[in-house]
Amino acid sequence: MNWLDSASHHAWLSTHRTDLLGFGRHLARDDGGASWLDSEGRPDIGEGVHTWITARTLHVFGLGTLLGIPGCRRIAQAALDGLRGPLHDAEYGGWYSHLGADGRRAPGKSCYDHAFVTLASTTACHAELDGAREFMQEASTTFTTRFWDESAGLCHDHWDTAFEQLEHYRGLNANMHGVEAMLSLAGLTHDPVWLERAGRISGFVAAVAEDNKWRIPEHYDADWNAELDYHIDRPDDRFKPYGATVGHAFEWARLFVHLANAPAVEDAHTLVHAAERLFDQAVADGWQRDGHPGFVYTTDWDGTPVVSERMHWVLAEAIGAAAVLGRHTGEARYGDWYRRLWDHAADFYVDPDDGSWQHQLDPTNRPANNVWHGKPDLYHAFQATLIPTQPLYPMLAASVAENPPSTM
Image (cartoon, rainbow, N blue to C red; front, top):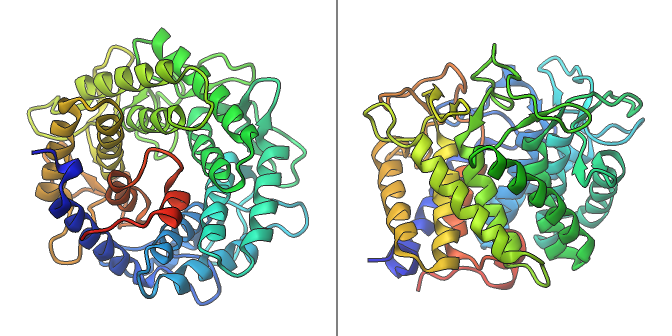
């Protein structure tokens, strides 16, 4: 049975995504923005306010608004208000990465944060939130002028607060979420420049992945030379770990398929071929490498696991990649993996009482928190429930706005 075409499975996905939104009902802060949630779904005040969590909250609850789920608009609007207010830098432009519990603003401006702000701005426009259009215009302009490098066809990673000093580091995590934002902007504005830019980034990633046996080098210097030993002393870093990140292979594979299905995109076949190779290598390197089901976090350049803890987002992205590859190719093996991965999620990650996902498990699939504590946000798990129900293009907010999923 192919769950991707199953009405009853789609009904389960609908129920599960509603449960996830219910778990996140306390995300909104009275002063704007979104909280980091603990394992019980309560705000972790000590974490302050993170821009990436606030932007993801706007995106997720903006999607909930488009889906017609009561209570979502208030949370989405609070997140938007936080991004337009305390998290926004009124002096130099752009967005701070973090406000501490004491109100202090973290120095610097990151592409990772701005990519999520830009993604969220498109969702806010589709959901017709207050102030969304002006917010989207500022977000897309800031992203283009500060982070897009036309000569390289890739994104810078990190500036100082005043946008005067650019760090030498370049990274593909920020570029990956930049592609997601660009595809979402293309669906909102219908401006082909966003697809062209997304294609340039994706072409670079596909080429370097193929050159490294379909394991993606994540870290580069200012001239885009790969630094394969970057963070070898910090292998379990949350955002920039050493080695090949299994979950990012799945995430890039999914984005390649979305891009391949966009209008007038060249080399669609090459993108899908790369997506299939990335998926296969990530499964071979990451799945059940230590006698227990689940994906390891990272491997070295020969595919040997480095960090064997299991991160929920890796599984969620594997589900999304299996779904889009199954839809695009029609190959049964992707449907088989899709079903297997949801079974794994139900067995080990999904809390049957509140629908939330454990954010980290140890190598034996027991809850752990040495990399991630609590359950900070809903983005990856929520998208895993929605991607299988939607067309391959446009991206989620545009497709839900045009064609809300039905469980009937």
